[in-house]
Length: 511
Image (cartoon, rainbow, N blue to C red):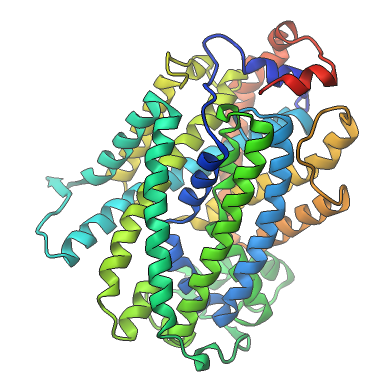
């Protein structure tokens, strides 16, 4: 049994031209940049900074955002190098299949499915919640929830998922254009709120900038989870007393707000649908990342400057809207509520697209049933897209889901770590491949990036790690029960379909 077998770059690129399993290239760098901003700027921009400030870092959450942004930005550069070299659907799954091996690629793909499917379901659910909240704020007597006996359902998530599923079935370009228009609108809303918020900022609220470390409560009464389960893994492992604030609070805050920068692994999954991907994918990822770092940092400054982090910590679910209410600007709640509705809608589309492309790549390789990767006349996997939409809509509409931000984080951080490690490996294995973008400082900077991502993972809670291990065990059962035996790489199909090419020939592939 060879679980570390690898696909060659030639085999990977050859698959993109396979009849019946081929995606259409029609996305520009602007489309890709907007997708990254769309998935990263959702409801979280109005809440995650306030929560990290209240319960982790205080005003120093600004540093937490900068740490997370730098680590994510550096990891994004590793993605950009691979995407410029191997512009194929699947993102980190595809990259690791060509460098580290099949079992690692399966783990990453399995994690990405969990991350994007659950994130999409949760976001869809809360789109319905915030839509009803917006209706209430503007005085409209509309409720999207209904009950049949003891069964409760919200049809709002079904509507938003169905809308974007239909758009994506007819073509990724159509969905990207609609998503882009909504994204520009929500960026304008964020900037308006930030500008207004600066008029309420008081310098005294930034003192102390790094609050002194203090112990946390022994348990979470609401959830019944002990403090030991909620503390960072490294604190639990070393036997430290669980604390908040201080330097450790900044680091745990960085691990939490890392969720704010997610989305670029999703953008990388669309490499196979980009025009001139060797140029446009790195450019789109870089521009989108820059916009997000600026927006989140500005919101963090405004949130912590408007009210004291101690007052935010007294709220059950602090947010930017909470800060406006505490300074008497209740009118801002309506604008923020509308911004959240628009923001969450764009996130749904990108996550729908992302999870479908990861499953598409894995099924095209035979690790999942191959019929799932069949494409239609518009160059999209119609059946798979509809199937993913149905599952996501049902989970969101009929399940009592909650935001598992840490679960999403740990899956993405593990992917970032392996992609960073893969950069020097591929440089060593295939120096002949054309790279229109190169990660600087190889191999030391990619190694440092991997270590930084591992450190952020260690700052996630013990409970998150337990859930992560359980999900991996389920994935291993499916891989050894089905994936390994049906992989095209193992039965020789890919070797027959793709003969080795020279570096010069590969330079022309994927354009």
